[in-house]
Amino acid sequence: MIQTNYLIIGSGVAGLTFAVKIAEQFPDKKVTIVTKANENESNTKYAQGGIAIVTDTVGDSYQKHIEDTLICGDGLCDESVVEMVITEGPKRLKELIEWGAKFDQNTEGTLDLGKEGGHSENRVVHHKDQTGQEIQRAILNQVHQKENITVLDYHLAIDIITENNRCLGAYVLDQKTKEVITFQSDFIILATGGIGHLYGHTTNPKIATGDGIAMAFRANAVIREMEFIQFHPTALYDSSSGTSFLISEAVRGFGAYLRTKDGHRFMPDYDSRGDLASRDIVSQSIDLELKKTGAPCVYLDCTHLDLDGFKKHFPMIYEHCKSIGIDIAKDWIPVVPAQHYLCGGIVVDKNGKTSVENLFACGECSRTGLHGANRLASNSLLEALVYSDKIYQYLAENSAIENQAIHSVFGWKSAINPEINIDYVTETKAQLQLLMRQNAGIVRNDADLIKAGKKLSFWKKEIEQQIKKHNVNAALYELRNMIAIGDLIVQQSINRNENRGGFVKI
Ligand SMILES: Cc1cc2nc3c(=O)[nH]c(=O)nc-3n(C[C@H](O)[C@H](O)[C@H](O)COP(=O)(O)OP(=O)(O)OC[C@H]3O[C@@H](n4cnc5c(N)ncnc54)[C@H](O)[C@@H]3O)c2cc1C
Image (tube, rainbow, N blue to C red; front, side, top):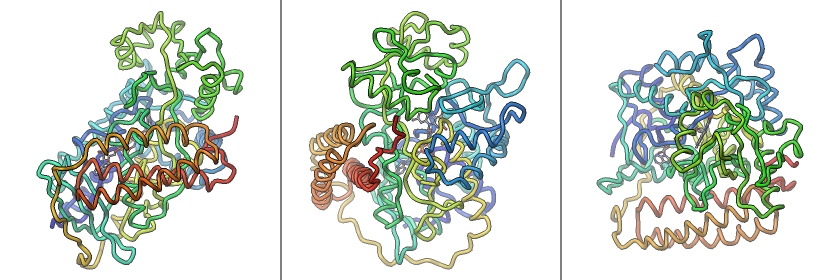
């Protein structure tokens, strides 16, 4: 058994930021980060567009950013949370800059601010089209300088240990030694990110399997608004399943147009903001166009844009397109919507506390009330930065805890069974992804959701049998979590009796 004071599950912006702050506050306490892949693999690393923060106090204002967020959330945001997150943005940005993160500047030496769908002003602070990577680099650098932080990579958290609704620790599989480690921790912070791989077609990397939410659900934490899933309108079209390369919304902010195959600019038919409508509207519009025409994709036209400016702002997108034979000066980029972000998740209060004592959640796995039905572009990195600070502030004052003993540890018979049926995992996962795309995708209806619910109930029972037989195995545990998340999405979609599918009706 390993004892630690703060066990952080996940090494994206949410987990890392909290780790740096709490380690600095309490140099004598132990801070442990477990992360299931290498330390910098996360959704954070792939964030392109940037962080929405009001820094231009002349043309922009907190009020405008608040209004844009509320409109995008379709009346379901918690207004006090929106105000809190948005007004804290500049402080969190200052901190990132102090930690060494670099953001693009314009010729006057002030921050170069991008514009994305749903934003009424230019306010997206960015580092080329690699903002997430830059932030992660800077925060990881801080993490490495703190002697009281231990980072354990390739360690997959399996379950949280609770007793009487109080969190005591967690079971973690060391994927190299195949050993299950029991952690006893005063506090646990879930920062496990998103769920993209449940849909197969997603902008998220492979780590996004909803583990933290599934673990919290098994620990009886309250989970809400799982039906509010955001599909990014412009993932690069690729007929195979897996992670799709993202064409940032900032490209439309830079002036690109969406067109059908025959050149029609369809967005003005759906929304007066045209190509700059919020991403839920754009995704639904593309979905309708695809259904109308039977085409596999629509196109993003950048041919009229300033090529040098494009290369300067979006070097990664330019190079990626070039590497697959798309010359953006002449060719349109084929795009489709793909799963991108989860707005709901583990319910937390304004201090990041879940309904389970001593268990906190932060970042994409949490449901704070900021996003409502739909996230405004580039509000999620901001949310993770603000809430990791809120949890830190709370625990800086409330970390005294009486000695805990683990009473309910159950022993693992063996760490791994080499006989695991990998075909079962691969096939069930593929079927699950197809089911989610077809029955719980951009546009949903009750009949399809009920059908999906029945299939998921069957899989839920089947996977428990598999786990009994094979004991601990990373692939099986991830699949179990994905099935649990699928079921939560389907049940919560059905429960939202307006059956709006998590999106604003066009
Ligand atoms: C392609 C792309 C572009 C984006 N662009 C933007 C943008 O421009 N602006 C913006 O605001 N947002 C953007 N987002 C969203 C944003 O990046 C994420 O919402 C945010 O980074 C989430 O941070 P996080 O720390 O909550 O989770 P993540 O960064 O996803 O980190 C999760 C961590 O948890 C670990 N983990 C998961 N399960 C386990 C487990 N069982 N055991 C141990 N470790 C585990 C993972 O390995 C990972 O380290 C984008 C997302 C993607 C995918």
